[in-house]
Figure (cartoon, rainbow, N blue to C red):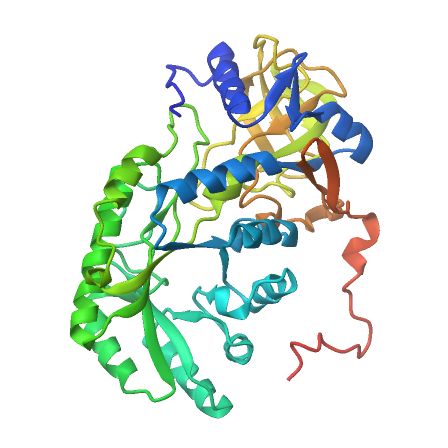
Length: 456
């Protein structure tokens, strides 16, 4: 679906665009947002505000759309960093997905959710020896090494454990994602081994008796919405895999295409064209001429980003030197990305709406802020919204990924927001609201010990 570009991001243009976004993934009845037939007002009355709400139906739709686009030989691994709640892991595991983790904490969560160790990939720079040892002890499917130094550490640990480590090499490709929001290829990077060094590292890796090289992993960008760019990157990955396969004289088990598939956050952006993507994917090799027996994909944001909404209540409205500020009971401590402060990836605020006034036209320009003692806690600047009253519900759309767990939740000691899953018209609490005492839970007094998993 294409979201029409408007000449202005304010006024009725903005309101119409956000309404279009709401209707794409949810419903509107009597001017109010409904998620799988449950009104946001009922959710606020039952669970209080602020909160995160997710639509199971939207998750199902996103999964099916992706599964229909990629060939059956492509195995999908949910990138749990996007949203690590065990409930979502169980949903994706039931679909048949594997899990991509980036820490021992995520690995423990994936195992707790029921993931088979052999269906887990471990990627990310800076893995500690303790994390690598734990992963090897669990017998996970692949560890994706980001440097020659990491390969050596894995080999040493595998020798000590008497096991064979299955690793993939993550490559920092020479092809850059020039159109992507965050470039992750073609430049110096903490991620992966430079493509120019790969022959030497492969030769060294093959000489290690405790290592089995099973795959390659490439990831050149994130928040990609251009199907032709994605396909160009995939073709580069295939060409590199074919070259490596020829060099080592055998077919690799896996070629991991990474993630990076995006969703529209801002006016003027269009959804990733899955029809174009499918047509290009159909042209890729489907046999061992690929250089690998199986393709892997690590989507996160695409699967769950559009399924979530962050909801907060208006608790104050004030005018300061001609500018109106709408103050919410939630803010950037719950949703850092929505404030535009999530690194270089998403500088602009997310789509915002008054969820109980979706049928009303835009009024005057306002700034929407949270309760924190910093001007960074601004969720929208000078945006025209319907006339707002105390008690109204303001929502941030596209909030299912890189939202709650990517935020400075402990800043100023406000309680963490609950999470609610709406499935088949039934709202279910899947994470409780925090309390004022939570900031004291992990305070150490005297000589209290470490977590057993961290004690050495």
